[in-house]
Image 1 (cartoon, rainbow, N blue to C red):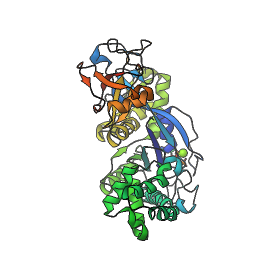
Image 2 (cartoon, protein in one colour):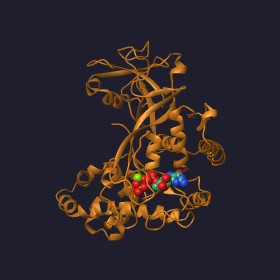
Image 3 (tube, rainbow, N blue to C red):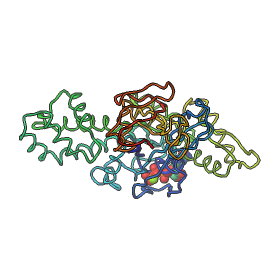
Image 4 (tube, protein in one colour):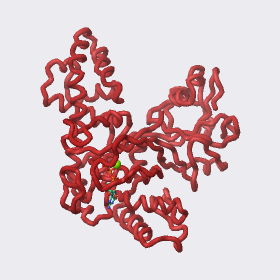
Length: 408
Ligand SMILES: Nc1nc2c(ncn2[C@@H]2O[C@H](COP(=O)(O)OP(=O)(O)OP(=O)(O)O)[C@@H](O)[C@H]2O)c(=O)[nH]1
Ligand SMILES: [Mg+2]
């Protein structure tokens, strides 16, 4: 369990700078190609207004953090080695690391909006590159990766679908072949439906159709947010506009990973603090701010937040988790009076569950034994008994009652 997001994109786009910003880690960042050689996993957080105020209690979170009334709920983020055009036939580091990306629930596709990467991925004069071309080329490599996956398994799929006339079973065959890369049966059914074909059409699928199927599977199985990075470089403005004009079906969030990394480091020193309510940084100790930090603050708070409206890495993560993946936050409590776990920790855990998850699903997440004898849940806000089939709403506080095991 747990939400996992992978950073994908062209080499030098700034993936590791973003990774370090949001995890507080110190992985190598470089202005040369393929600085990141292997996937790196880290922990970061999404933010949601904590329920403790509403219930008039002081909380002591265990699985998450509560800062200034905001719950910081952990998610996993994976920094990946960069891609370049031709990666799917082995250029650069190739696409072998994409199998790691496939374990993620969603992608953040990082694009250098300032156009300071040339076609091959080298750092170049800002404005000489082409952010939209970069985006398209990298997406093309990813779709090609899916297509290769289908092609490499085509014989196996064909052989097996001949053994059954039952369409569901045939879909199962495709699913089993692709299960390792987090493609669900529903993804496959939806992709086939969108194409208007049946699973038996694998028998005579043209190259073009296979590409289309790969592309649909890519889109459906990995919701993607675009980060337009390097917004601190003036020409990035037009790169960002170009991306917005040409890509209508994706959310694009402007970011300056460099400046945010500077501010995160300042935050560690205690001179500034990120403020989730306003999505900006607050000054705590102006006497100790360096000139660069002041400039970064000004740019982030005035330009990115005021002019671009919504921006920054925290906003990007929140959008990915709450909008693209449609996650809800739920607080299970073992003691319905104290709102605590058995040890007395008040509002100890906040879980992310996909929209549509039921009380039963939540029980499974907490403990399989709890799920076996699950009777009902009590909605702490209203005192109402909710059946196991109740669909959890965002920021529900629930006490689960089970015949087999007490909730934690
Ligand atoms: N001006 C500016 N430069 C940035 C920004 N983000 C990253 N960079 C620079 O871009 C270069 C590449 O950054 P990385 O974070 O290593 O890029 P990457 O996408 O991880 O690259 P690979 O590991 O090769 O795939 C470095 O010189 C960074 O300092 C930004 O927001 N603004
Ligand atoms: Mg990197």
